[in-house]
Length: 392
Image (cartoon, rainbow, N blue to C red; front, top):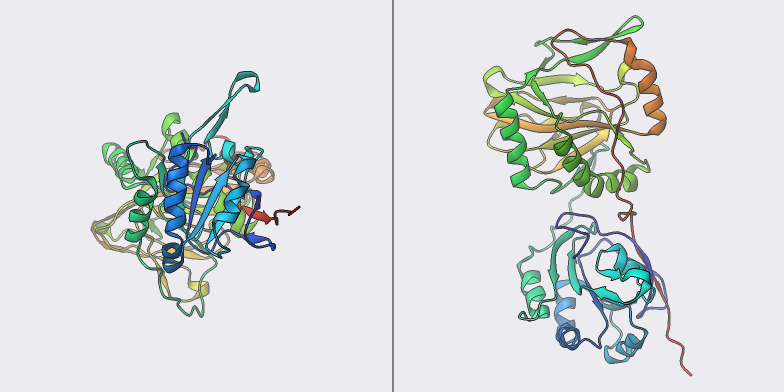
């Protein structure tokens, strides 16, 4: 069974390949990645024949096909498909890549292997749009091609003159998971949310509805925290590493927050790391959980008047140094999952400053540094190292 699920980032890897003698990079276009193991498998052989017959359709759709083999005998496939910029073979003869994708299991003592042929459909950012295990009763290539036909055409390019340096990550949480979090909040009701202000040598937690109107429910259930961590480590942390060259190892806490239309819930422009008790924060996570409300967009006034409104399940990540505001919700309720990310050195700073935070009785004391480890299988990127087959 695959180690990946829909929405996960495909692990990067380096592999020998056919086609061009130059190196090529995955990413920036949609791709089909068929881990087939060996063409000696009759069912695989039939699927490969169907994929090869559809080579021109891949070109028409602008989708690249990559077939991944662990069998050196499959090099003969290079001779069966004419050179194409949309059709490639990748040689994973060590099995390392297939193991990383969870498709190849080595038996005890290194005796024998089990291989689960699977096709992944990836978007331009190497996120898994869908996956199709090879099944005996299904015409595999036709199943994959039928799905490709349902994909919307890529958007036309836009001219971007200015934008805030923020990272928008789509489909981090499923609709079902978002609704679960909302139900947990509704069962609890949350409590008034404060903010931290530096007063002399102390960081004071302040409740001031003239500056912030929001209620928060702190997620304290370890199983739920671990579930969120597992998803974010696969779907958010690799993007932070790629975009900002920073390795997140810790998170401050998770809260489900609610901005109410009944009291015009909002948070005035602020930065998230200006007090001693917040100086450890590197990145803020805002993940919208619902729609059906009016207002409530995010604004980064240092970078123009634009309003940011991620769809439910989508995350917005940005530096805690950026000035930002949550505009008033004028109708309905806006639910959002919030957190702050930081690294090991920042964790040391947090340990030193926690005793300087003064909280009212209504504000719970923060726990120690909480670890969120990136998925070791989700190393960012993969590059194919093309090799010409030597002729004798």
